[in-house]
Figure 1 (tube, rainbow, N blue to C red):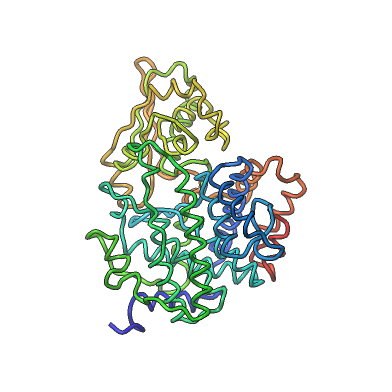
Figure 2: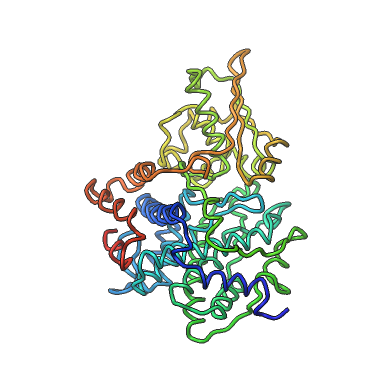
Length: 466
């Protein structure tokens, strides 16, 4: 197959040709929300002083702080674009509060990698809001196309390659390449560089059986963002790579599909898949959100007090029943990836759940720990099939009080494309994440500017407010 007719080349060509006018108004607004979301999540993680972000950023500030460069969203200065992407990308991953791709072929987080890389380059290059939105749109569509071609077996049956590391670096590198005005061949090379050099993204820290829940998950995302910036910059200066990194021999599909690979399908125009990206209402794994909402709904509607509950059965898809089943809460990561913890929290706090409930010392609240003992997680065939068909993360909760059983099923939680978050919702999330970081007046200026990102002539007009 000639390079200029390969699916990889056609995907690079799509990215190269995508223009702002090709993106509909709802997708533009959603990407602006995603940019705003990633930034405020990073600030929130910094405010909580999480070790993975601090260790990484402290080290890089000691050796690489610059008077010029790209903004550190923590507010601690500037660094060269690749290192700003590393630091911001690490902070953005920590709270597990980030975007989620909801697609029948695959799931995972993309904006959390693509946006730190693209934003850092856009600042350095003085790119406009329109250019940034277009670059991110191209990166998201490329990454989703790759995920669909690969399928989801790379993270099933005991395998643990993260979606973020397989497709995130490619999408981020494409976004950076567009901001650098690279041509089709260079975009293909940039994808090749990012794909060949991407961090493995193995997930032993997320396996309940290992019980570690370590910091590596966060840094891997920062590395992926840094790699994207480096790939685009080096290709601009003459570096070459394979232009068949996705579908070629020994490429991504061959290495990660495990018999489930499909044709790499290039979007025919526009940005048809941006609406498949959900945002999060809760600072925890998306796989527990529906169960949280179902448990809350029962307790609020029926006026149930947690002390009256005898048993709670939580039904979810098969993989989630295994990977999100831990009853041992050792740190904030364990809490974010625990269905028993999330449901116990929901029946006790109902509508009062906040990001701080997934932080120390709240995660060691004995009332929640004791409630977890009454919660049983069950793999459900119907919910598993729903996930296979839609990519969604449904949850069904049954609460037993004496002889009475109450049940509720939620298929699409708040933040999904079926129930999208408004800018008002984003404002509440912003206030929670940045309490004591900004004044109310500063927050209002930033969220107003966030809504207007597409209209700014130089993205530095926005970043100087941070």
